[in-house]
Image (tube, rainbow, N blue to C red; front, side, top):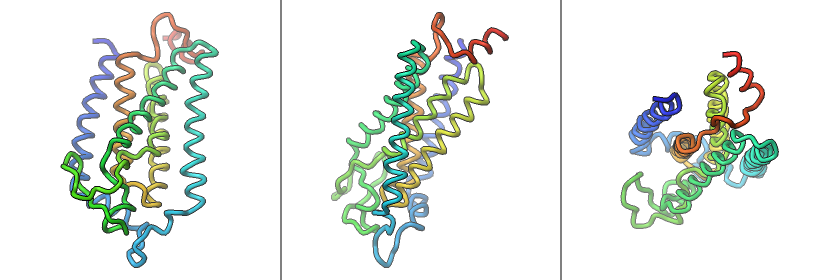
Length: 234
């Protein structure tokens, strides 16, 4: 079995285990409620930071635009230098966030601020359960905003064959960036913690699938200098 297929198999097992763990941990909603509790005012029955200008400006807009810029920069650089790995990175970031957006658009799960218990009128229901009688406007699962940060995890696959420690560092950076962006949305009442974690799962699953069908490095394709140096010295 090739190293690429071994990595895909390993990642597939991790995805299956993490999906089971996420479902088990968040099935009853208690962890989601505990994570949102500090940001919800029970007396006013609202999220005080829902309309906070600084959260909207810096977390919801600036952070998103930075992620979009990075994906576009990777695509432009890859096209200019004819380097497959940078094109792969741009494609992975685009497809993974698109997958989250499509799932979110089709979802009947509503945002916390629309739900009974958080000042709204909609009734919640569990993942993989039939929708409640009044599910609300929906289109809130998984967390779309956080997916932009999580998409940075795609850089893992560019570095893994030659710089595994750097690859793990990039993966961790993407995970932290996505959680930072997603937590800002939680503070506003826009998402539950589980929404963001499932977003990370979807992003990573798309990256693994793309790595399987079209890996970032192929024989005969120019690689970045630092990767060529590593390969030649091995």
